[in-house]
Image (cartoon, rainbow, N blue to C red; front, side):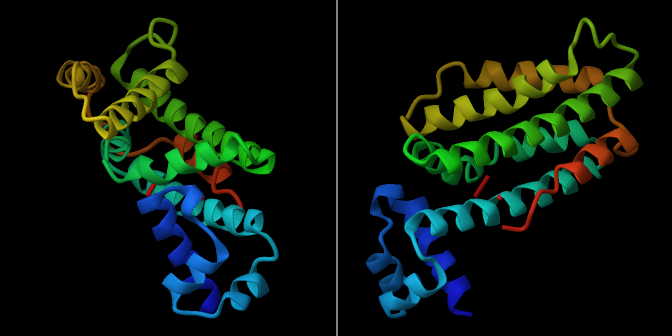
Amino acid sequence: MSRTAILDAAEAILRDEGYAAVSSRKVAAVAGLKSKLVHYYFKTMDELFLALLHRAEQRHFQALCKAIACEEPLKALWQLSIDPDVPRLHKEFVALATHRNQLRQEIARAAERTRDIYAAAAEKALHTAGLSSETYPPVAVGMLMDGMARVMSADKMLGLDSGHTEAVALVESLLARLGPLTRASDNVAGAAAQSSGPIVTHD
């Protein structure tokens, strides 16, 4: 399908060369299509970028839902967060958002839903482990995991790994203290369901 080919080509350029390299002419060339087809499916580049974001968001939340269905949802979420390929597209979308208000709003909405899923998983884990949510606020646990993973990803792009071993050890010690869960809670599943988002998007 031409639309899918266009999105695949645009995503490859965005991931490998950055958003500034994405143009209708280049997308068409990579997709092996005529440039007029790009404009047929996407009237503006903003439409194309938004469609890319929504597609990446859909994959991201599918991965989150799969993670929270594991026996140890928090551990699965952490492993997903530190996957080296996940933040690459996100970085480019964030850069794009500084110039495109609609994208900024969509990214903020997706980030809020991601945070809700992490917090719900953390809340269940804390309850099961008999730990106080006042001492370990669930939203803070989620931000610690997701935020630390993003910092490490940005560091690696710069060739920096100072403190990474210690940071990973800190998070994993917390996960070990929380212990395994037999399944994700209804609250976590509910958060994921509410966060599924429209089909319109961590590569």
